[in-house]
Image (cartoon, rainbow, N blue to C red; front, side, top):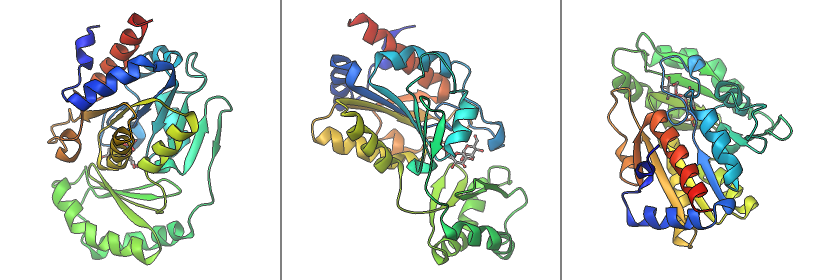
Length: 285
Ligand SMILES: O=P(O)(O)OC[C@H]1O[C@H](O[C@H]2O[C@H](CO)[C@@H](O)[C@H](O)[C@H]2O)[C@H](O)[C@@H](O)[C@@H]1O
């Protein structure tokens, strides 16, 4: 594999990578799941990690301080769909699920999580009527994640238009029950406030005493993690931001693409970056 896949296009990214490579054993690699490790598909239950993700991660993880998956998925679902449990090399993997509300450790195989927010049950009960009143187009689909409820429009004839039609009523419903709306790729997620990927990543970096960070994401929910890396970078922590661009025909998200140091094509591109990073670390030993 050519190491040229890991040449960041920005000065900050090149500096960040040099810092990560100078002390890889104290660096954290943070990764989103859907769209970054797993290809985007119409049915969320059918999303699975790209087949080369686990081999790439199990080769990289022993060379760095820590690998953490930071996802909107329930932690156990990401572990299952990722195939992360019981993998040699991934004995110290951490998965922060529900935007950091849940935590799974490969070391114990257990998920720790707070109580479910009481607003979730109320939103769940009222959602069908709200969708009907809003004229939700055919193909609108609801995913119940236990701690959050997600409305998907990918299967409607106009996913973006459908999302806009539903946004106001869903924001109102969420607010009425103390929840917030997390927008994503053709989804609006009604979830409890108080956590986001930025806080989750910042806490993890502090806990591990990280001296460098690489973070890869593909969606609006990853912007908080991007901001966390940028803030830590301003304080002197080397950091590299990777954008996993769409391979599904959707336009790239400028909010991420414009801030990233490295833009790759979906999970296959992320796998190449993980492989190249491992190669550079081994070369520097
Ligand atoms: O933080 P992530 O790991 O990126 O998870 C965020 C949401 O991902 C899922 O939705 C996305 O992937 C689906 C499967 O490929 C796709 O159908 C959908 O359009 C995407 O937005 C998931 O279904 C959500 O619950 C997560 O919040």
